[in-house]
Length: 313
Image 1: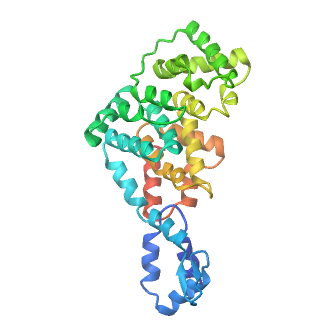
Image 2 (image 1 turned 90 degrees about the vertical axis):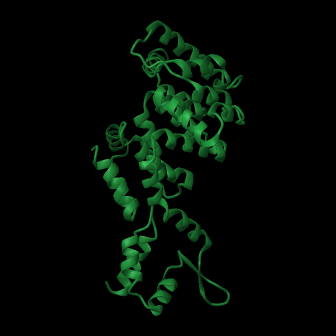
Image 3 (image 1 turned 45 degrees about the vertical axis):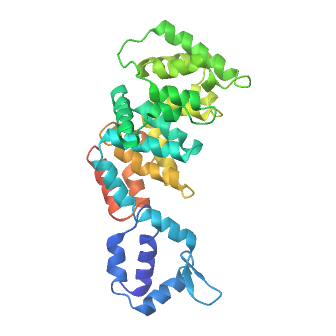
């Protein structure tokens, strides 16, 4: 390629999820100092002219690249890791980051089977010499009671659903939601018990009766109760939940926590329900998930993501 085309290609190689290592090597390996100087001057997105009249890297972009270069390593490490260890480390990361990451705790507690969650709790003890339950009990905020109960639960996973009880609990949930000004539902012992002990099949019946009785999907009443909304989505419709998480990760203004979900979801769900997530993503956002990844990701990171998806598509 001639230098102008090289400049454009190199700019793209630096500008996505991951970096295009092979392209960087092929271009930078043949450039001389005049090409490098020209590139710095022509890419103010990356370089700022200093008062001493030299082009220095923009600090923000250096910070972004520091995250993008290891992204391929991170997905490989997570893919090879035992699922129990992976979930335990994700839980530890969420607890360390604080309230902005509590949604990750909900995701893990609600989208894993009881045995998988028990395995993560065992792995957490091995890795960090303490229990998830003990650490969660020291969290702050109104979500604490719900989070402790979710990570501590061993949920019934049989096929039996008591329709009468499900109908009653739909009413209980509706009353709690409509009285949110008096008490947040996630602090209500009865609501926490329903969310943490009932089977996923039973909770799907509760959601169904909620719509039958009140004429609307429960999601419509939970826009101001995100912890409760995410809990029910993860339990009753994980494919829709994961599709939204992936779509949020693709947005131009996504922060690093949100972008990290792309790796997490593809890796953790690849052997679970990725085919259903792919179908849901296509239905919700009118674009194939693989195409979206091809559009925004780069290099070996992109290739590995696509390979994990295509093995189940």
